[in-house]
Length: 224
Length: 224
DNA sequence: CGGAGTATTGAGACAAGTCAAATTAGGTGG
DNA sequence: CCACCTAATTTGACTTGTCTCAATACTCCG
Image (cartoon, rainbow over all chains, first blue to last red; front, side, top):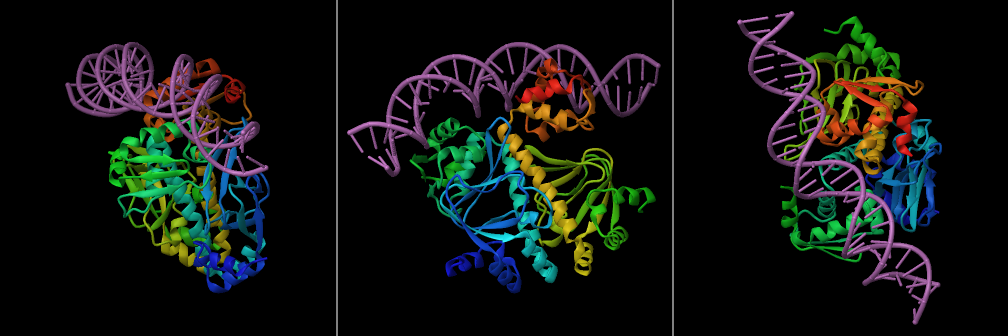
């Protein structure tokens, strides 16, 4: 079920491309492909961890649902990114739930495969640890933003981060519903809506799921 | 400079005790001890990563200072915990600043030592990756709290987490200044102060840096 | 052309931040 | 040991930000 295009995607995926070629081949030939529809899950919080995942097509969110039913989105993974690598070496449960946001194609590598591959070729250890560290670092920066920036600033940062640093202008196509973005940024949908409105003076306009940025420098100035 | 008591502390430290004995010995004999005073740093954000650290005595905070000068505390490490393990295998910079909160004694293991030890004995992979995963998981839970709980709830959670789950009553000795706790919880000192006041009806009383919890169940009820 | 779900807007309540003042705690030298 | 000075913490008054609930407008399909 693994198409040639899938292999190409993996070959350029952050984690997989840092693997030594023999390991890469091994994971590719021992993994499987899963197709999931929006709202379907790869795993749920509390399930025993059995595999790591790489997104071949689509978008996958990792979220935690509190006992009161409110969902907090921790991270969203797009094509070429992978998650749950660090769990490959632990007998543990997934701490989050992985759900497709759009129809998605995901490559699944069983933990056992990874364990064996690493045992045979310890050079790949750096790749696993590197990928895990990248997640760690990303989460640290997110915590910093949640603690020291307002909702408005987090929205502004999202726009700036979704737009190439060089240009003076930019367009961001939000690939999911706005309440998803709101949850990712740690605010309510209404607040996100009002934030976009408040960013108009900074050259931000929204058209449905499209954000138009007229003046990148002006938006950056919000942080002073 | 490594005292017998230091070795004992390391032997019971989360990360070190999960190491195979030969690796443990090697790290212990190749590391060094550093004493730092409050406000002194082990490293600053942006410095090239050279070592990993384990706290032998005292408290070390990891923080990020934004360009506007405001500091966000990401995590606080106490005796027996370690940090920066994942950086041992990367040529990268520290993403945060490590500062002592009280007079502290820290064990420092150069990255090279760790790299060599692991190369010789790949069994220790699990230990490094496990420690890194623990951090990752902790940060995920923190993000969830920041996104879905109010300041008041985060304070309540801090008290509950600082107190043994069994008992009905408890005492928490905050080991640092309150503005540090405020920053750790992502709020202003004034707000923390008012939060404690608002928790009085839930059986929480403060006496300086001491928090007295009269009724654990009552406080838990805040989350319903 | 509905109609369900999604997004925006409005009004008011509540939470958190700011600035300033008052109080309390800690540490130092007499 | 106490007085005193400084810094930490609390409290007050006010502003601003965010949430809630409700109503309206908009989209996207079927």
